[in-house]
Amino acid sequence: MPAPIPLTYPNPRLTDGMVVLRPWTDADLDDLVRMHDDPDVARFTPLATPYTATNARRMLDAVLGRLLSGEELALAVEVDGGGAVGSIGVRPDDLDREVADVGYVVAADARGRGIATRAVRLVAAWALAEWRLARLQLTMDEANAASARVAQQAGFTREGVLRSWAENRGRRVDLVMWSQLPGDR
Amino acid sequence: MSPAIALPSLLTEGRAGLRPWRAADVPAIVAMSRDPETIRFTSVPEEFDEDSARIWLALQPARLRAGDGAAFAIVEPPDDRPVGAIGVRVLHGRGSAEIGYHMAADARGRGLATAALVLLSRWSLQTLPVARLQLTTHLDNPASQRVAEKAGYTREAVLRSWADQRGTRVDLVMYSLLQSDPPA
Image (cartoon, rainbow over the protein chains, first blue to last red):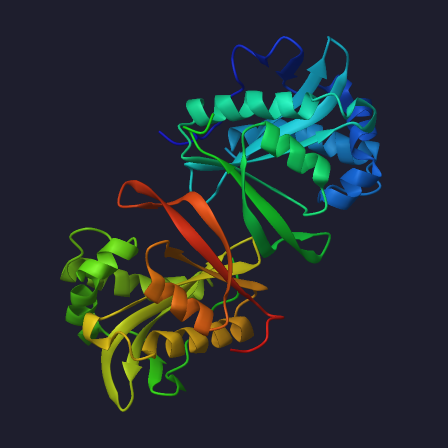
């Protein structure tokens, strides 16, 4: 059975003892702005720049609709009971429900501690099993070395560079494609 | 939704031509889709019979109107008997489209697939709202890979478990051709 519509939140919450993945709440607005209004996020993701409270408000308002329509499971990444320090989302492919895409962002002051790797491991294991995925993939800019380390440490295999794969702020971009299959880890 | 696609009556390049499918092509469509190599290397459905072919043909005008894609018979003018099939599918929201092709067994090895791919690629980049054309081949289908490379496509990656082929996931080689690539 591929990814269902509507999607549902993982229950119980996904955690490895350090990182907790939980639904977004209105209280996360300031943390969302802090993590997304960032030069690396502007460079490597299609998120708005500058990223304002209005953008964060719109994202929070859209999260439940995107879950119910089967577009995306979006979760806040929390460490040690503090506020949200990261964002992770899994999107079933609209053409192939046995395939999904992962995306993630970690706030600048929380980087370098393995938080993204832990979050991606948790989400990947859950989505591959729960949605019976044949393939979980992620794409990133070739210059995004930190993200490449996360993908590799979380059990993804680099497959190649896909030219003009997506559009980022009106510009076609080449992206590196990575995948993880059910038997990989 | 994309703009509606207008189908040309005939495109030609070298010995190959592309023309729209007709009702009279049904037996040829069925014969080609039952070829063992075509079954092995493409996702043609099992038990694809004349009724399936008629349904497939009947769906084509709606695909054109919705801007979803276009399908062509490959011919060798002036003969207009189909010797192969080629089609393009717009991947909405991605700025790209995907091409697929297969040849009748007795039409292979004469450069017809390459000429057809060159024709459809050129037409697609001129006509469709896409920056990227892509196609996938099986790892063990060197004939199809040669066609892609001769038509100017670049091999990008082996994508694992990329597609479902009659209930089995298959690894496929991804090729692309961009607006900005030099003509083949």
